[in-house]
Length: 342
Image (tube, rainbow, N blue to C red; front, side, top):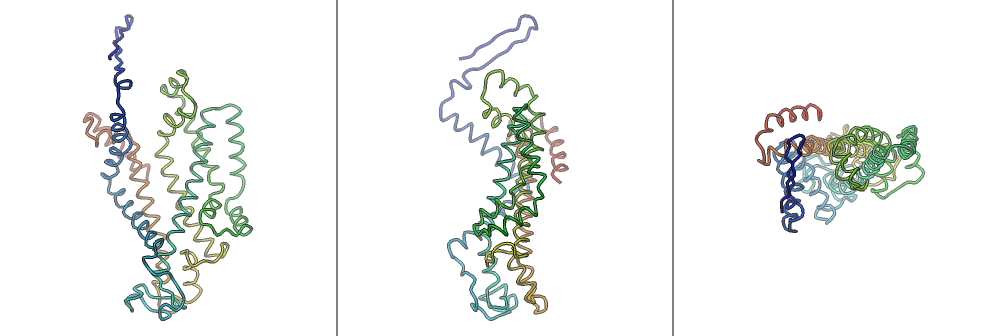
């Protein structure tokens, strides 16, 4: 069914094809969702070498976590090898061993699952709170905006590092998910203010105003019209939150503010430094946790830079082959995106 209407004053013909929405079958809707939310984003992501490398690195860490989770490699234990073995000196411990005979490779592998849980819990907590507070305050305005921004200002006024040190020293958490949340306990405050500022600009767009006039609910406007436009910014900040959790947790374990456990790269780094890894010539013992930390951070950064293109609709359209007319504009946006991401 197709409806057509003509504006007599302007001579413009407005055509609305109702069958595109009303007549769509369930299979067609599923196909549309697949095209919009899976195929096109995957196509854009795969076209960028940074995304491919980033996913490969993060995928490697996930594989290592699964190896540890299912005990496919032996857990670290004292006297499982000769003390202070050098790298590749023995086939059973290719990265060598520490002063109590623990396999260095085993320490790296079995520290990965808890680190990933810590990263995901902390970053998701901070980003979800910041997005909800920032978009709701910016969209609603008035007293709601004032109240939420007052809470954000209070959060920003509390120094982050001292607060985390007090909480970890008092609570002595052992659950990695709880540790991740504590590390990002007030990370959301500054980010929510930045998201609110962008929401104030987006809500003035005509399509948002049209949704409000049509009586569309606030949550639907937030999740359909506003948040998708903030995704590049949210993605970059999600990666920044992940990196903050990595560096904070390693630092807290290294300084001894968190309960001692073998399953952390910060503890391994501390032991290597204090137990004479350099004097003993076991450089791999010291460098292994540093490489694990830096490689994971690199993978997250590459994913963030590559995913920034996924949320650019012009680049998506060009790569999906739907339009060739926007190719020039897409390349210009691509150049802008590269500059912004760096």
